[in-house]
Length: 182
Figure 1 (cartoon, helix red, strand yellow):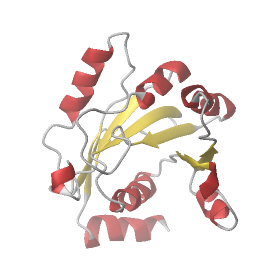
Figure 2 (cartoon, one colour):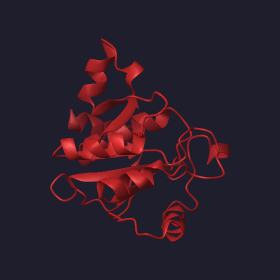
Figure 3 (cartoon, helix red, strand yellow):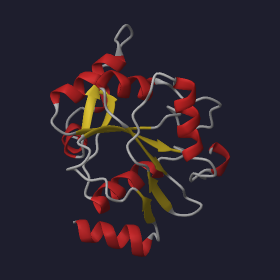
Figure 4 (cartoon, one colour):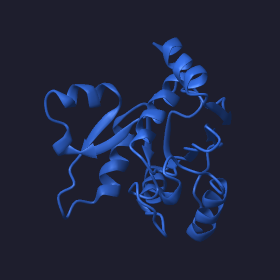
């Protein structure tokens, strides 16, 4: 299946992977991965192909209501974990516990928390990384240049403002599938 994914991703779609192409399942077994900009449902499939061509297992969380039979079989197979989103739950703590329960867990999230244009990123991914004591790896969904740029692992500091400035700078000039949402 990997060779088929490589043909589709590289040859048919014309995408490329740049940056930290050496991140592997042996180097970083646990991380929060932020994908930006998240402007379209197409991003999910680009991410699935990226993980196949780089041979790195990644995960995602979804509301528990999505994990019903038979979809739960597919979602679990591609690294999905269900999350109870009822009010009063500490979602950061619940997700951080997933890192404790798994030997290998790379959680992929969109810092915007939506596919629409936002003025500010959500902070949950940052607090998850700090609580779980795992690095953040950034990757671009750059449809303009048809590339996924992958960063080196970045450990958040105690200076959230500086950390966010650093991360946002990494994504400067990246254009998503829907440019007006970038």
